[in-house]
Length: 288
Image 1: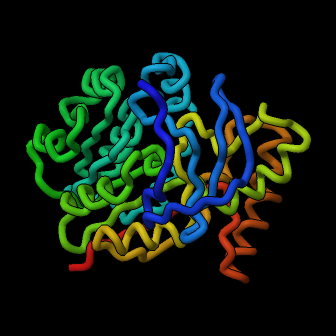
Image 2: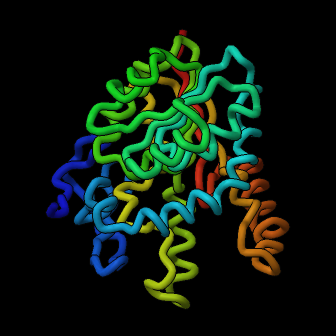
């Protein structure tokens, strides 16, 4: 149950890091380091996901997160191809199955897997036998669903939690049909660093966007492209996540977010190609 430390970058294998800042979260102290070779942000020490699950109150905090994100999931369908009975979808890290339920209504043949037993049990009871618990082997969990390949795999805020992203990505690629795609959303390294610099002087560690207790690495577009190449995939799309335009706090904060923050992010990306958004939407395609 001891936290692990980084000796090498989990993406490029470099052993050289630069210190970016110190953070504390949930009673733990972290160093946020940047790989000198590929720029990936990593937390040190890192808490493996199973340790995070063990120390977190999944019945309150994480379930509340799933519920609050339900309306945001609806906007993610703008990012996916149209659903049909022929489009088989796997939601990895499905939480309580909210997105799978919405995908079924949109016409996808949708399934979900998660590593938290209480989530999978809830999803099965509320939606049906379309969910499997991941113990240690993702492929073994998928076999329990009696399906072998998928047109679409979705990873909504998942890859930043994964201990071994290359192995994980290769296992996902094996589950894709030729021409199939992984659609993922993950925090954006550059956008997170900008928010850190702007807000930390005013709010301190009370407001952190890197969330090092659970996000053990933060990717930028170049990191996602590298990950895709290492997994035999092609990154065919990468843009700021428009989910960030739709907040859940209400009032003036959401007005600024929707009509000031998001237009600036979108126009900057369109004009310069700089991806400064809070999160990334990326598509990784298995070339037929």
